[in-house]
Image (cartoon, rainbow, N blue to C red):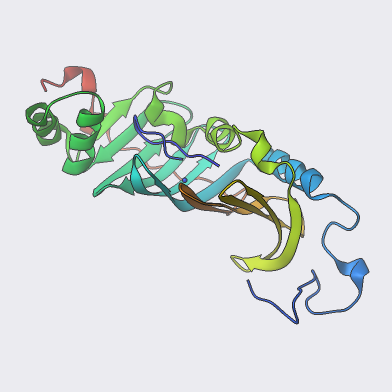
Length: 246
């Protein structure tokens, strides 16, 4: 599954006698998770349930050949509220969004220097931009690439863009993810190993998704349905990038 950041696409158990069932280490096969259901059907239900959830907390890392290691920690809901951080390549930025408005970004000097470089600016321009914007809340339009992290539908769609990744999966073991029982669905696609851990109780939410290969990612999903608290800064503390002199 792929994850994207500012102007850069990035893609972001325990065993018991060899097998864990939903109830623990029992022998009753009727207690297995999602009895009689195929792995691909479970995966489809998990994607649908996750998409319908009113809110979710996503946390993870991704490593790509072009962007290095990137970390994400974001809470987002279907009302357009968002709060969290993204970091990588020595840079870090905070994100805020309230009710679908502009995404506010507070990045450090490295974040804005890297952002300028990715946009084609030279080193001097990057330093000027970083000097002007570092540590300030900068408004980014809701339809900009920066907003992808704070748009629940768009973010989840980007992770499920290649639907072939969740087809042809096999049932794995039942383990624990963040203290919740989860059934592992797995597949190998070329040199890449893909897995999805699905909650076995309540809604079949995705609890963890990983990709291992030349480009790897691992994202956990939790706090489903919890309110996303957003404290917006005063308007006078928000910078419009259009006013930038860099």
